[in-house]
Image (tube, rainbow, N blue to C red; front, top):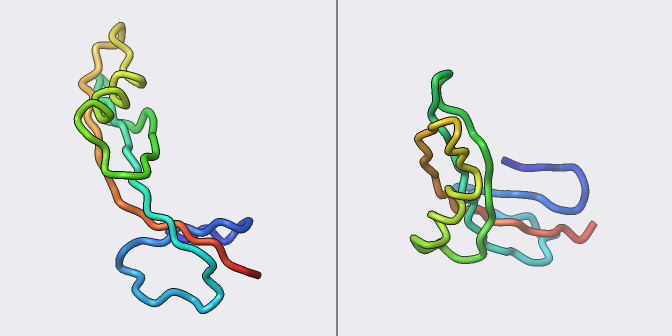
Length: 88
């Protein structure tokens, strides 16, 4: 995904050629938390980490968005992204 609004842009690993206007590249990991309930699976939250999250961080992210009263099954997906700033 590339966001062209503002000064921040998000690129994925499969984009190998960076524009010459790149100032700095930052690697981060996005943890997306999903809950499965009566109405199917839906995304309930997300957290960013600067390094690959350990088990405690994954459990914390899932617990933060879990709602025990709704009896959801909660899971998460981790994706690696790169963020860079252009010098325009």
